[in-house]
Length: 172
Image 1 (cartoon, rainbow, N blue to C red):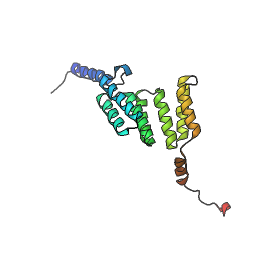
Image 2: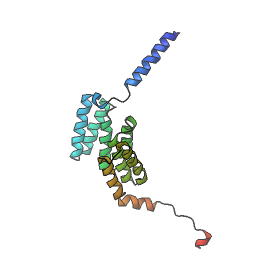
Image 3: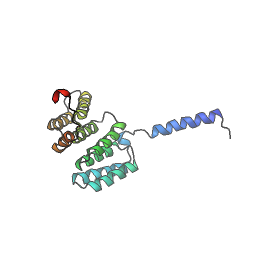
Image 4: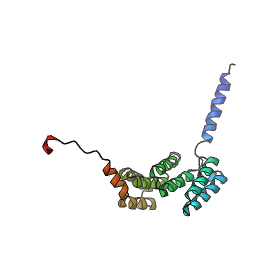
């Protein structure tokens, strides 16, 4: 079957319009059912019911995968459970949708510190400060977390896995 150039052009333009519709929705255009599950997930997190929070947030994303706040809260759930690597990935999903999301930058920075990647967390702090153009609450909170440093067990594990330098003739 042969397609006319007009049919091909029309299908390409429809595909472009369709893919644009799948792009990031402004937060006020997120499906209300997804928002409802997001709120239930936030409430479950507040009560430290991590499995219930995760279930609600995953449902929110199944309903509307552009619900950036659900990714942020999933990051918070992962941090609260002690899974900073997982949290960093969830925050990255939110930042892929909106690179200037201050809450996602802050949460990711906190997860990076929790993981022991303090220098990367400082990069997030610098980005937040650049976006705020003044000292704002996310910058203050992340700065405080960075000042505390990585948890002791993470620092101990990092130093235990460092490879010792080979002996040089001067050391013998």
